[in-house]
Length: 220
Image (cartoon, rainbow, N blue to C red):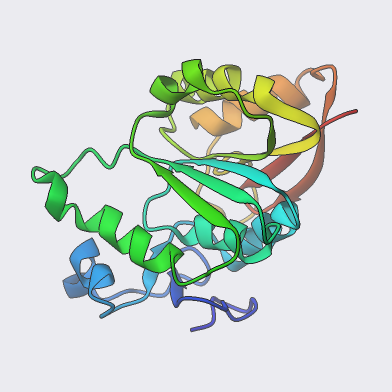
């Protein structure tokens, strides 16, 4: 199905609750129904943001997403990444009482595997647990995990050092915009403001902003 006025999603049906205020059927909210394919997966971003993520991911070879949920942004990344690239999806999926029956994880995996481009590596741990042993240079990093300010700072400090020159970091829910849902006290907004607006972090600059998404590039 199409999201708002944006382009049709190619590999899986996605419904954005943030595009046009459409009400989704509360009876189908649980991820169990997404896993069964009885509803589209729920995106936590707009169609404009989806396209911004796709554009940033174009032909990138090593991509890392922190915070996967039902997998809508992972699909955006996978749709345009390099055909031989690797997409690392980091999410602990820790809220289920029975790990085997974690339908949020199952919904995401079902959705993401419908796109065959590149290779996907699932890492079911917290991002701060993964970072100490990480060694690969990163072409794209998407920070969309825990949104309290301390957690966003930790993800930035733990992971930005791995981003290669010319690589990008995408922050979600990190920008105020007309008609939007963010506010100045949100963790991602405060971190982006501190790093790139109130002062300029040497070696980094903003290259794109779309609704709540901010994309920053590491300069060569």
